Image (spheres, helix red, strand yellow):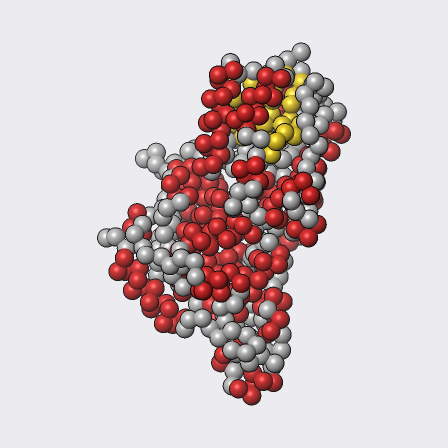
Length: 464
Ligand SMILES: Cc1cc2nc3c(=O)[nH]c(=O)nc-3n(C[C@H](O)[C@H](O)[C@H](O)COP(=O)(O)OP(=O)(O)OC[C@H]3O[C@@H](n4cnc5c(N)ncnc54)[C@H](O)[C@@H]3O)c2cc1C
């Protein structure tokens, strides 16, 4: 009996899973393997919400495989040791997985591939983390794109295949043992850390709900911060509990849902950027901005992280992140701009803070978003874009419902002051139960002065 291994990582689903399908098609039996890698699980950038999501996703995948006669084989340890060991136990000569572009995954996969080769086995890397494989969307001169809009045009021109069908029966060799899928407690988290139900079934249900209606209003509502106007599929797309191709296929009319389709392509763009410039994971993508004397940890960073900057929209965002492990995209842009431009704190600290808290923390999208906000990334307008936190609040949270939800100190502040409570007179502050400096912090910086300081700072320190 021939056996193949399918090493699952960020593809925790049965639908549209080319690696699993290929393994099932080529062999009589398959080992669907997940390796709990302590370097990732206990790493400084892991979030409790992602661990809870992962526990749900693995339990769900095991249940789905059992419905097809199989099971998930869970092992613990360094993949460079575990994957070849499982291949040897199963007498499998081929291990299938999906290509992943993060620096950690690239190095890890190279180690596993080398270890397999030493055993006389080899790996087959399929594509499914993003729709268009990194490296396939190129300029006419064959270069990777540095700007989103032409990337999106070239991306669309390639066309998108239909999602692959689920495998039918999955036969797992009885001799290959594994541990049961980890519980929340095994991963060191609790129910309280569950920000979102994880797993393929929960993800597909989320997708279905979104496509059944909210997608039609996406363009009009996605920027309104108090409204649930977006898909909430980011954690599913990160762990692959929903395939990006499945989401794309659900857009019956791409032209009518262009704004949403563009966000999916943004996700692809940042994966392609990271694949082409892996050094961007740690350094400024643009060489012009590699010598900036950014600030580090200190009181300004702490005030930002705790949601105590005195700017309601910034504080609401940071408290939403702390209390729900998720953050509205508009809020991500506002708080990131504030940290980098108003406070001149190193974007890498904000990036790491996000990863430690987000349920959807994703190296490619997070790095892309932070470098965009810091003005160091792929953007035609590098550092002149500085978000005004008061105007952003007035525009995208016009009645203050979002800030009041996360910053209860502002509950009784009248709408016209809710994004700038320090502009109330002393009597109004008393009447609203929000005396600035006593009940709610004074603004940590004056935005107009901070903006001017940032413009001069960038102009002085950027390379020509
Ligand atoms: C500073 C900053 C950090 C970010 N960090 C992350 C992160 O760690 N993980 C993450 O998945 N997204 C990140 N984003 C992108 C975006 O904010 C989230 O994907 C989005 O808010 C998730 O909510 P949703 O699923 O409801 O999005 P929707 O609006 O419903 O979008 C659908 C999907 O498109 C993708 N997408 C949407 N916007 C973007 C974008 N700007 N860049 C890349 N992909 C996008 C996501 O996969 C998302 O699930 C970041 C953005 C910024 C500005």
